[in-house]
Each structure stands twice: as C-alpha cells, then as structure tokens.
Length: 85
Image (tube, helix red, strand yellow):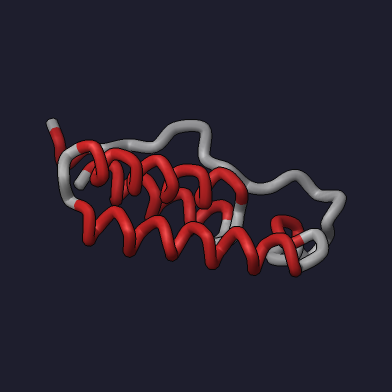
C-alpha cells in the first residue's frame, strides 16, 4: 500500500505520464508478479504500457502542465508521512 501511495504522490507532482511514474508502475507490477498476484500485475503492467505509449506520442509531455516550460518544476523538498508515526 505504501508503494501505491508513493505512486499517487508522484502522479500529483509529476503528472500521470511522467517517465518516473511509468517506471514506478512497472516496478509495482513486477513486485505483484513475484508475489504471485498475476492478475493485479497484468493490470498494472497494461496501465504502465498505455501511459508509456501516450507519453511517447505527446511531445514534451512532462513540461506541458507548467505555464513556462523553462521554469523549474515545483517539487517539495520533503514528503511527510506523519500518519505512520
């Protein structure tokens, strides 16, 4: 569940089709596969493949959400998981 929450946070910050998000989804699919959750693994892998295809077909997809593409993305310096303490 923590991995899924991490991917959700990445999506909110970077966008759904960012390479880091796609890589995280692919890694999560491999984890499910190793644990024997083949249906879940296949579903997540399909999702990551679809996002990868969308990203490749969209020029400059990871700068699209910013008003000024030259501007550095706003990324928090620290992510707190206070509910875990």
